[in-house]
Each structure stands twice: as structure tokens, then as C-alpha cells.
Image (cartoon, rainbow, N blue to C red; front, side, top):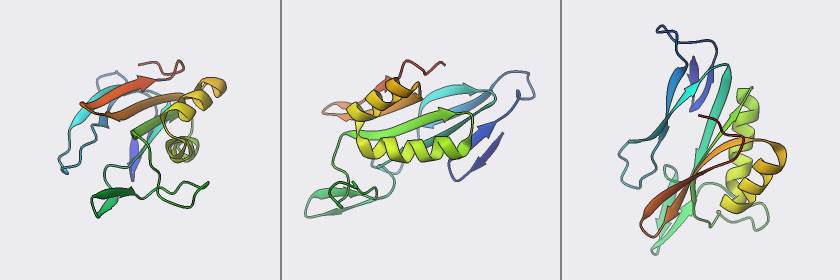
Length: 138
């Protein structure tokens, strides 16, 4: 198992003969780190993109570091985090960024159409909710 900058590639099994157990981080705005879910990863890569770590606030408005290519401005949607699973780290990384910029609904639509395994964490009025694509198997 190799992790570089948040992208992970796991091959084979861990020392206990089980799939590598990889945590998906629970987004929060306080800087605390918490686990949202733990995924068994075997011969697969995963990458996560989100807006909860790198952002700034100005005049009470929050600006993420991801830019919407249609507007040229920071994204403005409720998707807090997306984790993409793929055979290669490069593909997982590229898809996580691209799908994150699209937002929850369009990301799920693209994932379903192209059989991409994704795990979404969406901001709600009461906290967060999760959604997965049909290709996601835990």
C-alpha cells in the first residue's frame, strides 16, 4: 500500500491477509480529523477531492480552491468530498477532481453512465449525507 499526497494505491493484502483498510475522512470545518468510513482496498487505487481543507472566507462567504471552468469562479455546490476508486491512481486522481467540480448530481450521472465507483459526502442543513454510485462495492 502506497499513499502519496492523499492518493492511495493498494496491491495484494495486508499482513493479516485481508484487504488494506483505508479511511475516508469525514469533512469538517474545524480542522479536526475524523473517519467517515473505512474501505477495504485490494488491487485498486483511490483518490479524494473536497472543499473542506483548502478554502477561504471573505465577507461571510466561503470560497473553495476548485474553480468551475464554466464560470472561472470557485465552485458553489453542496458536495463536500468525493472519493473515486479506479485501477490506477492517475485515473482516480483526475476523476476525483473533475467529478468534484461537477457537483453531486452531475458527478453521480457521469459515474453511473461510465461505471465509475464513487463515494460522495454532501453538505446538508443538518450535517452531511453520503451517496455512492452503483459501481461502488465495499
